[in-house]
Length: 103
Image (cartoon, rainbow, N blue to C red; front, side, top):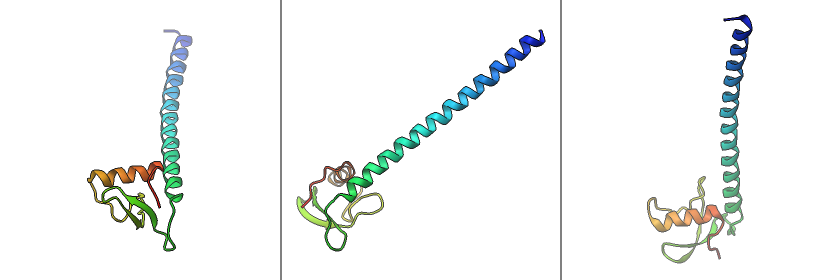
């Protein structure tokens, strides 16, 4: 094998490895950007909820169909949230999407 062919093969393999590494980094940053945008939207929607003087969000409970003033935790779940209950899960989804009924 000539030196020129070896050099060409070496450069081709290095460039291909660099291209694959670039694609991995690009995919990772795209995912991070998408996650950051989603987190921003959720936080923005939760901050826009009307609140009382004590900082509790004024929402209408889907489970009991009543007005509630509830503190939201760091995952934007109301204090009355019960895990695995379909109405509570729907309430949290609505808070995050900005479509929760308020008063």
